[in-house]
Amino acid sequence: MRPSVVCCVGLLVVGLVLVGCAAQGQGPMTWLDRPLDGAKLPLGPVTIQAHASDADGVGSFEFFVDDTLLVTVPAAGGLLEEGTAGWTPTEPGTYTIRARGVDSQGSVGSEASSVIVVGELAEPTPSPTYAAPPVGPPSSPVPPTATVVPITATPLSPTFTPTSSPVPPTATMVPPTSAPTAPLSPPPTIVSFQANPSSIAEGECTTLSWAVEGALTGVWLDGEGAFDHDSTNRCPGATTTYTLVARSPGGEDQASVTVTVTEAPTPTPTVPPLDTTPPDIVNPQAEPDEILKEGPGCPAYSRTTTVSATVTDAGGVASVVARWNLGSDSEEVAMTFSGGDVYEAVLGPFNSTGQLLIVIVAWDQAGNTAQVGPLTVQVDQCVT
Image 1: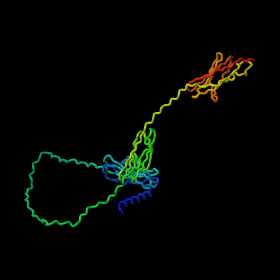
Image 2: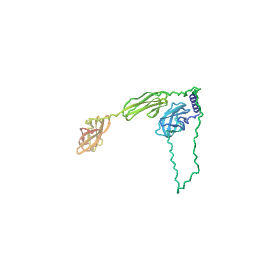
Image 3: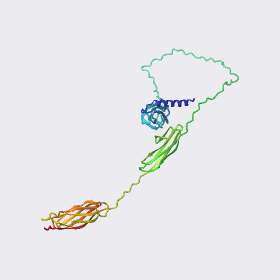
């Protein structure tokens, strides 16, 4: 059995055992597949891969670089799920990669972490060491005690006698063979990515939808993790370009769509037509139209009269009054609404004889006015 198959079978068995052991509601158990703890990587794109297991199903992965959330990657909700994220460090250094799973109930599980070194770290340059100069007066030179003996060169006699012909090799040279490398999966394909509608007015919304095919390690919409077949609503305040990125071990595919936002037209205020029509006053009357003033012997006679009229206006009636005059006496009395567009008021009692003159005046909501009259009521002396 090939090592890769054994590795995959072992990983599956470990995941299933962890799923069976995990208690519900405690969050997924997570472990990092890569990069491993202590890894030294070149400065460039880094692929982060993790697995998680949970009895309630794994809903998503959260990937961190040091204490900063890098991305949230959705999962399919299975008992054992895999999540992958891409990260491109901007400078060499030592980083802590962390990953944790969130189950379908929203419970956050344990963290898995790796401390890695990215890029070549500069080796410290040793400082040059200098010998300290001697202190004090120089001492007298010490003559050497060794005797120099000259070396006499003795010629060597050759002991190697070449053969007449070279000896051919007895073994056949076989070039080394390397183990075959498994081919990478093809890059993913963004089948469709569109906005409907692609042109909206300010304050309106559009629907972004997409479909991605291929062996994926992740899909991102403007850096936010997404599913391979999905849609979402967006309500931009200005013209905006959205970018969809799909990645797999074999490469990546990218597509963009632009939503054009047009400025909403400024509404033109509607000026209502000027109301110049006064109210309409019809059927004015005074009942009774003959009354008696108070006098000895006739206290039961009426000394008041009731004035009424029908008043209408398309813009609404504001007020109605009755103005009366009897000799040197005069007064203005407000008429009240009694139903059916009828207004009325009681005038009196009167204690002077003569002819009572009554004028009805009405105003509408626009300030237009109308009047009718005078109505006449005869006021006589009570005769006993």
